[in-house]
Each structure stands twice: as C-alpha cells, then as structure tokens.
Length: 424
Image 1 (cartoon, rainbow, N blue to C red):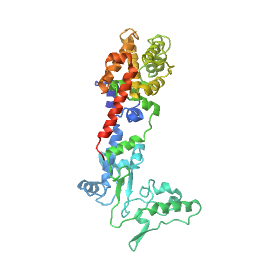
Image 2 (image 1 turned 90 degrees about the vertical axis):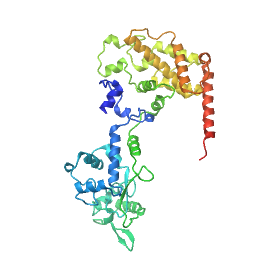
Image 3 (image 1 turned 180 degrees about the vertical axis):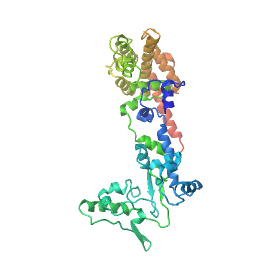
Image 4 (image 1 turned 135 degrees about the horizontal axis):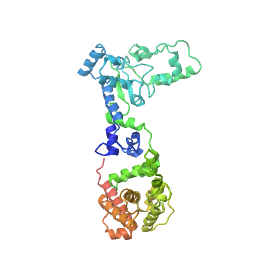
C-alpha cells in the first residue's frame, strides 16, 4: 500500500509527498466517492478466504491430506482453527486466523460463510451459523446460558429414531419466563433444518446462489461494509466527457483536498503571512470556496459563462453548490453531462491560471478566458460525443441549441440500441 500511495501522490519516482486523501477513501468504489483502487488488505483477505473455504468444502484433495497429516495428526474431521499457531507455517497461520476474532474485516468475511448441515458432526450447535443468518448463541442467549452442552456439535443435540431425526437439547433446569419465548424461537429455527445420514457437512458462501466461494464477491462484500461519502458529493465527482486527470482534479476539489494555501498550512507547510492571500485579489486567505467561487475575478468568469448560455442567476458561494447548479439547474436545459463538463472546464482553467501566477509569475485570469473555455469544451465534446457534428462558430454563438442536438442524438442512439437488441 505504501508503494501505491507514493505513486498516486508522488508520481513514477515514488517520491514521498503529502497524502491529500485518506487511503480508505481512495480505495472506495467510485459510486461511494473513491477512486476504485483495489485495497490490498481486503484483496489478500478475500484470497486467503478461498483456502479457508476449500478446506471445509467436503471435496477430498491431496493437499488437504498433507495439511491434516502435518498439523492435525491425520484426523479426517478437524476444526481448522484447532491448532497451535507456533506449530504451523506463516501461510497456514494467516489462513486459520480468518476464523479468529482479531480483525473486524476477518469477522465480516467469516459472517459470509454458512454451514449446510449433513450429519452435523462438524458443526458447533451454538457457536456457528447453520440455522439462519445468526448463530443460535446470538439468537437465544438465555437458552445458551441454560444449556448443558455449550460446546456440543449439532449431532449431539438429538438422535435418530426409525430413520428420522429428533431434536433433544438438554437444559440445567426447566425454562421460565422469557426463556420459554426463546424456546419457541429455537424450535422455529430448527424446523427448517433436516439432518441427512451419511452426508458430510459443507461450507456455503452466502453471497453466491450456488454457495461456492468467489474471490470477487468476497472482495465486493468486504468493500460494501465501508461507509460512503455523502451522496450529493458522490454524484458530482465523475464525468465521462473530460480527461481522467481533470476528473481526478474535481475529485480532490469536491473533497477540498487541493493544495490551496490554507490546506498547505493545515498540513504543516510553512508559508509567509503575506503569501497566504488569494493570488487573484490579494484580499483574503486563499481557500477553495473563495478561490473558485467568491473571489470577484473568478465570479466574473462564472457570470460570463452564464451570459454565454443566456442565463442570469445568483450562484452559490461554495464549490459543491456551484457544481450542483451547473449539473442540475443548467443540466435540465443542456443535459447533466454537458453541465458537468462546463463546470469542470471553468474550474480547471481557474486552477491553471492560479498556478501559473504562483510558479511562473504570469498574469492571473486573462480577459479572453471565456473564449478558451468555449474552445476546450468544444474539443472535449468532439472527442467524446458522436453527435457533436456542429461547427465551432455555432457552438460559440448558440450553445443551447447545440447541446439540445447532442441530447436528441443520444436519445435516438439509445432507442436504436434497444430496438436492435436481440430478444431474450
């Protein structure tokens, strides 16, 4: 992970630079506000889980016989975790640790497994999941405290009577009060389970219809347990009409993780007091909302862009608010993707001109910035949208009609694709 992190923030030289976003956020799926970078910890755990599943899937293999002979005294029916860690190899130690309680991720993975009971001589009656989504210990805690055999297997909790299995769980005393209610819950849970004589107990993976463990679904399951960013931010981040580096820029912009002077100071970068002010107006401390929305020079650019589209509106004073305005308000007229693209082009140029002024001492925002915005949006649309067949002068003079033409073309292509699709 260290190499991945250094490459993301430091480039191919793997230079150590500021990590602007927490790695957990980077590894989230794109729909949750991350970059979708694979989390090696979860990936490794999902791969190790494959071996844990295969050891208990009921299929006999040579490697299982070797492991049982080496670590479990050759016994055919064993608990994979019933071995001293000091006696096993590091690889097998990592595999059996999945069944322990030492990690939240491991616990989540183990919850994805469930026993399909055959004879019931391998499955712990109280401690493992086999009669529902919960263990019977969690489902009936009072009865568990009252049970005589707390460590017994399923096959120990009843007997065969003329080819039929009859449950018989022993209690230290008679049940009273809420214990009787839990007794009814236990009976209902056991009703749906039929033991099968001569059939082995096998592992099942609950997230696949056939019960077979798949590394991909295990990784997705582990990733799904992580919390997402606010839904409104997730919807603002990605746009297929812009280059990847620009989408990455907006991801950082919406998370307020660009190296503005305020953010640099928060991360311990020492700046002179007079160097903390906005490069364009030199009036207040430079932070994202001021630089991209509130600064009067930037505000004039947004006004010019709205006038180009024939609109007049009071813009919000936050980056997320302006992004929402272009995507949803302007997007109702020209389409969300074009509105999103337009917001990104303006924000990208503002950041570019700010950096040019900081590092090259160029002029700030030039007077012809609107023309540059028009050219850039036109080029990106021509490269990404098949329906963009109008010339540049039309895009410059009547952008709304051009955007509506793109929307109509996309609807026609979508309708044609549905009609041309073969019947199922």
